[in-house]
Image 1 (cartoon, rainbow, N blue to C red):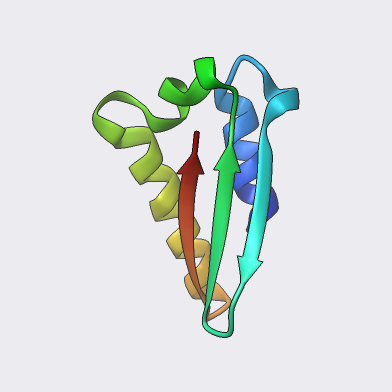
Image 2 (image 1 turned 60 degrees about the vertical axis):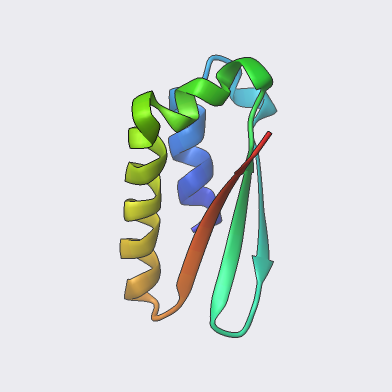
Length: 76
């Protein structure tokens, strides 16, 4: 799931080399933290948060398949 978010984020931003994704694992939930360049933050969030919401929807569908909950945090 970490690779999925990294792939999507790198396709959206102007500086794909700066994209960092880390995963904090728990028993039932994993938190995926996404860091991008400051100038690319708007592209990842999208107008009205639509892009971020779409990424979270894809992540929840992928995590449901492995019966685990995943949360996406976009960090400045």
